[in-house]
Amino acid sequence: MSGWLRTRLRAAIAAAATLTGKRFGLLVASSVVATSAIVAAAATNQPEASPLASLLGHSLAADRTPVATPTPLEPTAEPEPEEAPAESVVHESSPEPEPFVPQETAPEPVIVPEETAPEIAPEPEAEAPEETEASEPPPKPEAGRIKHVFVVSLASSGYDAAFGSGTASQMPYLNGTLRPKGLLLTNYSVLSEATTPNGIAAISGQPPNAETEEECPAFEGECLYPVETSTIATQLEIAGFTWRGYMEGMIDPTTGEPDNCVYPAGEEEEKVEVGGYSARLNPFTHFHSLLDIGPCSANDVPITELKKDLKTEKKTPNYSYISPDLCSAGVSEQCPEGAPTGAVAADEWLAEVVPTILESPAYKKDGLLIVTFGGVNPPAVPAEGETAPPPPANPLKTGAVFVSKFITKGSTDAARYSPYSLLRTSEELFGLNLLAEAESPKVKTLAPALLGENAGD
Image (cartoon, rainbow, N blue to C red):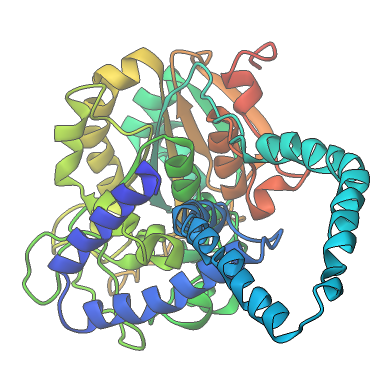
């Protein structure tokens, strides 16, 4: 069994040890179904089998080969020559030794295989090299000059609220400090006003559906993707890279203690504290490929782990997805009374968290920071006597900022980008295959410029 599978098995056991009640029941039930699907897909070598299924299939096949070796025990069944006395008994019962003429025909079959042997011999010799070539693993993907990607996802109060000129911008840190350090995508747009489908698209390429558009109040149906649906997290693990999701305020709803990979169980509706953590900001919790074998429980962690991991390049994951809680993401009416809310709250959170990323050894060496918006902040209800501000002309247009030493400072790009672009860019930076909608030729990517394959404009 491969080292990756041993790691995942240990992670799954460790994850199971921390789960209780409905979460444990859901994990066990889903694991049985998912594992069966993986084995079935891998065993039949279906072309649509996920990389994870293929990997498990190869490992299972490898584990069977030693079991197949007991066949040498069959040679002991060669006591058939001992049954020759039985033939001699027959000869004793038959007084005529001449019927033993079959011995004369026996050498003839010996001659026949000798004639056929030269015809059969070349066939296995020709097949052997083909099997050895097929058994050789494909070369592992390699990252280019950018080896650490940090994705920060917020809620948008409109393009002007973030990047408007003068007093129109409510985000002075994002617009006045980060934007001059890197590249502004002026036509970056989300796929939906809801947060859930944009996060899912950014890590898997899966398009919005009716249930994700409703923010998945329960994790079932189209809100929970089958094990065959891959994500960039699965791709990175199989390729030998590391990843982590850092979620602010993620706690076990039962104990109130910080916990990994928190999501509602089955038909149970998510109970969200005002301004707290919500699984709708955590896309990794929507995939059986991450829930069933352990990656989510091992790598989807509270944001308190971020500072620890950033201290050394070795501990910093190759891919980090960072999400604040509902208040810090910029969702209106999700902050304590009297505290900043909306775009102002999101900007203050950025000013506190992002400098730690920019000062980390991994970012300084070969990092890329992406500050994006994963959904649209619903307009705040105006106080009595106040007039609500007009909604943005195009609420889906949010803009996004890329910061790296490999990007021209203060530059802009007016091409159309989307969450699929975030996925495609990250996959190409690490040499991975493209998933789902990210593979569409219409999806723009920034990877060539970041890798130095063009003029960098």
